[in-house]
Length: 403
Picture 1 (cartoon, rainbow, N blue to C red):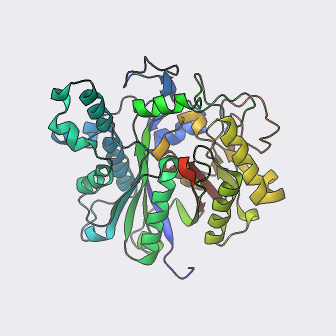
Picture 2: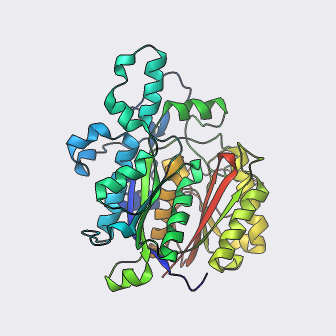
């Protein structure tokens, strides 16, 4: 395993509720800015929770020819914008002559909103609203293909639907492809836009807060939904050095676990296994880790179980770890959540700053780690773990290291 290619992050593209582009995003999170506000892009009148982390002032025509927009759903628009931002950040003008050595791996949970609109209009007898454009937009697998087509690349295109851990799965798959030499570059991440299905589903599970997301706090009431996209440009380290690229971080390894007996909530054993496998794949000991970007949804069960799993894996070293949740600021962006957090991890390693967990006021005895409450802190971190857990028991943790 160790003689395979080393994989590094050379480009970061972010579309989020607190800023579009990595610089605006990073400024927002280190200042503890919240993207949660009243929702305007979909009708949420039937729902109790009418606040979420919505991407405002997104102008897709800045990234996509306006003539193409009618064929692209909002999720694809987010994904393309994040991918182009990552490519630009990596200072790549063109992938020629490597088109067949460039891959796109995109994760999502719900996919494209037009599928929801098609079903709703058909059920209500509004068949005239089921247009050709809506049908072409609807398929979830279009998301990765749309990115590949827009960038003119011909390598692997994969849509990964492992729900809230999908961004980490995409990064893990891209990492394997580059290590093996089947790809030279990969755009890996995830994208998600709001849908009524997500709002209705999480509300029926009584899993949503109606004001703010307060991960690990004693008085946490649940998660909040967000939208956006995150894409990392990954390549082997020799390629990056040869072209003089700026390297943010190295992908050191990842670990997967599937605990299908716990469909709607993570399990300590399943989360612990993913963490342990990630460390093993990276060739690291628990005490080598400095910071964990927590899944940290703000639900009573998830935060307690994640905290217990961290203690189970890291033992006494857990008291020395920094742990924070990005979802306190941009809410739960589902299929995009791990990908956006991966961008945050890469920037944290470069900037040596730990983003905070905001809205944290009252410690919970069952969540007894250092959650970096409310204010970012400086720290000489060298290894971070990005946690991602999902319905269906799909757990994936990715390890990043300073270069």
